[in-house]
Image (cartoon, rainbow, N blue to C red; front, side, top):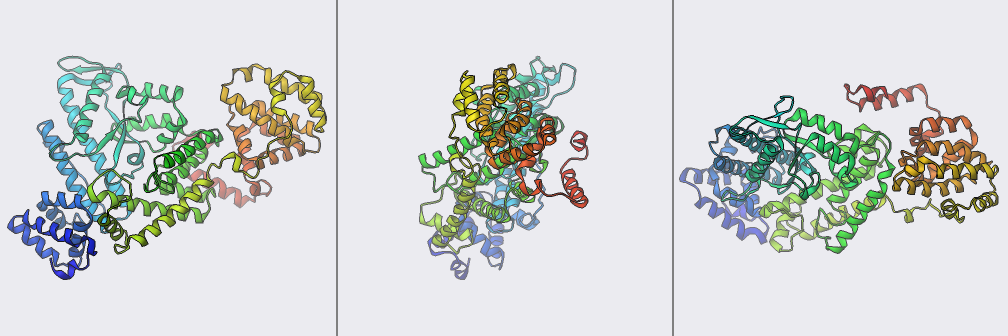
Length: 627
């Protein structure tokens, strides 16, 4: 490799690049050595190769182990192909050991191709993450097919009690589910199967769950165990129902029962990206459709905001406690905060805005722009920051193929990172650009799900409404209502206490009652702005009673004082609007947008709005279309 080419390498990396080049040639046979020497003189290939030898020690080690395989990919055009087809013939493997060996060699070969394309910018960020996700899916399906076949020969084929053959369903979570894997990602998985039953045709009969647990264990071992050939993917099963304390595999009925009865808000957050990545695709799609109501409520779900605030607080506390500022994923302004912004909107609005039921971060941000939930400048900044941070993540992980998002401290690693990122090895310029992106992300993160004490609109009541509502002192409540200027104060007090002491409120879960007692003082205060406070309050009370089983609507009004003010204004002016809202609480969503609320749409505008909503609904979803 000529001196002129070596001089293009930043000085801090030059010695390592030269040594790696010499060791690569020493590992080749005569023909392959001659090929590499010829390619080093190529105006395109030579600079790309020297960059890889300087900036990725992991690439160099794998290349030295299989220089001929890389040559074959170069000669067949695989290194240039943006739509490279991945195939693995597990049927050609005669034993589990051979499968494991071939899977690792297959993974290493594809890793070389993917890293070459990524660091040399022959693929964009989405191309790299998509390639890595397809690689994981291919390896998963190969391991599943091989081990299912082997296990069925021992124990028989699993069938439901109705005699229907059963297949494992592998649900990918996190970055795999979103097709956004990075170079050294874990793959987060959930294993499940359609129905209980027993195996048929084997030497001994076993329960389906026992069969699929054994199958799952074998799949994990084939991918996760480190051998002389390395590993395929690290597998993480902690997101499954009941976590590490639960069984490795459960059936669909148990999955649905778990999420319905015990599913927590963070699990809704995690399930946004769930996707069937291997096994029975059709059955898996049916399962995810059945679980969708757990993730996405049918209404604008402001009830999740407290949970999102807690998640946000945990993120802040973890950054501080673990001193994660140099972590480009978990630190302030990092990848996790961008994902939180997008997924917060998805949980709150995804039930009504079907376009938000997306796994891809970029597509969600585009949809938020279209829905006018985020301004154009914010979307541009978040998308640019995400690409910069993900490219940084890949460059860090390419150095040693380690699962880390920590910024390097050693000079050589820093220079390599800055070179790959387009800053000619200048760490200070790269670091300034990184911080610029992170500062903008941190600003947007702070603005989403704002803390109540930071809201300019929320004012605490000067009247003791909350204490009075919790007490049984009707006379004190009546006196306070009169002092606040309420007409019909006796009726307001009577009907309010009747509601609070009624069976519906007593049967509510504690969180629902807390929301009601949080909302009523705000409503009592807001109604004092009405022409006749008592009349206005009594018009709104049927709406409150109508949503006692869906207190997310109360949270909508708690979190949006402007919407509560508009509710009071409209109900004060019109008993018809009051009755309409009580019958159709979903219309409360319209109070969030003051501009559209008070402007009369023309026919063309209505048609356009309806058309946009219809475009987001699958053609075969007749229920959604009718709604």
